[in-house]
Every structure is written in structure tokens, then in C-alpha cells.
Image 1 (cartoon, rainbow over the protein chains, first blue to last red):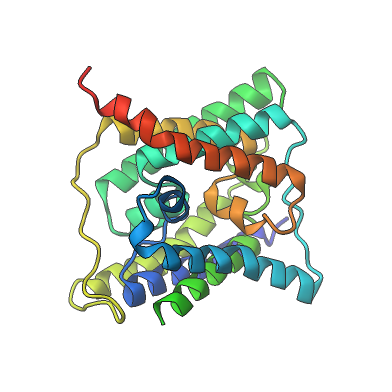
Image 2 (cartoon, chains in turn green, blue):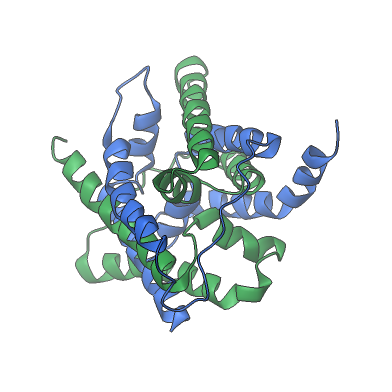
Length: 142
Length: 140
């Protein structure tokens, strides 16, 4: 659609605002994989409640929006279970090894002109492009 | 208060992901599909998000956080093996499923069973990751 970029820019602004509030108020970097991962492997035990509150907002507010507005954007998740399992494992392992994902390295890292964030983002976009090229255009599984 | 703001931040983040279209795996894969019908939306989302964040970092240089002692230190600038290999692995999964951690969590409540399958596999991956990382850090 022709208006997608406007919604993208506005939604992006909200994401940036969220990251800015987390930084300026709580003094923390808004990275989804780190905030969740620290609860999974135990490394974030010292501030577990803050992580849980973030996750509750991230999961709960979209549910509230769907319930109150009736607007339910379809995520178009693939029905290929092998792709979901392999994709989930790769995302879980990869983001924790690299210490960040699209929000931490991409949004928070690039805006700080962090070399690590810029390199990580270039690498995961490049391998994402290769992944779609192979799994969609060569193998035709997604 | 910190907990209230953490929940507010999570809610704003989830709302932004929904509004921007980044909870739609087809739009995400569309951005990565440079050899097919390329969808540039994700670029606008990144631009929109980096704007406010850059202002926040600028402010952070001369202030302290409202409800914390200090801002997070810069990580060591090393472009380490785990950073590059981990990001490469993450990108493969991102392209395959069209989901990264933030959007996967944002649609958990209404995205259908596929999101849960992805989410459980992702959590399992996060649980295994310290073991994988231990091997990467070991001298070759």
C-alpha cells in the first residue's frame, strides 16, 4: 500500500520514544532479546521484575488494543512448522550470542553510533536477505 | 516507579510495532526480499525509531537518568566472533520465520499457534545460547 511508509515512520517514532523513555528514565537499553534472554538464562536475576514488567507491557498492550479496537493485524505467520522451529532456535541462539537483536543493536546501537550495533545490523540484514533468497526463491519453502 | 515505566515502555514498543506493520511477517520478509517484491517499509520504521533515540543519547551525555544512578556504559568496541556469527545466525532465522524477538512477543496474544511454536523454540535457543557461546569464546 502507498501509505505503508507513513505508518512505518509513525510506528517507528513510537518505538524510538519507547527506547528513549527506557534510557532516560530507567537508564537502560531497550533490547527485546536481552530483556527476555536474561530471564531465561538467569543472567538478569538482579532486575527480573523490571524485565517482567517490560514483557507484560509488550505482550499485554497489543492484546488490549485488539480487544478494545477490534483491529487485529494478521501477522501472516507461516504454517511451515519446521521453518518456525528452526527460525525460533536460530533467533534465540543468534541474538543471545550477538548480545542483541533489531531493537538493541538496530535501534539503540545505531542511534548511539555504536560500531558493534552498526556491524551487527549490517550482518543480520545481509544474512536475512540471503535467508529469504535461499528459502523463498531457491527452495520455495516460505 | 521503575516498574511502571518498564511496563509503559513495553506497551509503547508493542504499539509501535503494530502501527508500523513490523508485526506482519510478510512485510519483514518483504524488506529482506530484495530479489522479489521488495518492501521498503522497515527502512522507514528504523528511521522513525532512530530519530528519538539519537536525541535521547545526546541528552544522556550531559544528564543522569531520572530513576537510575547512571547510564549504561559503552560495550567494548570489539567486533568479536560471537557478535558476527550470532548476528549471522539471527538473520537466517529472521528471514526464515519473518519474526524477531520484539514482534514475536507483541503478537503472542493474538497471532495464532505458529507464534507460540516460534516463541517456544526461541526461548529454548536463548536457554542453550550460553553453552554455544562458551565454545565460541574458547581459543580456537
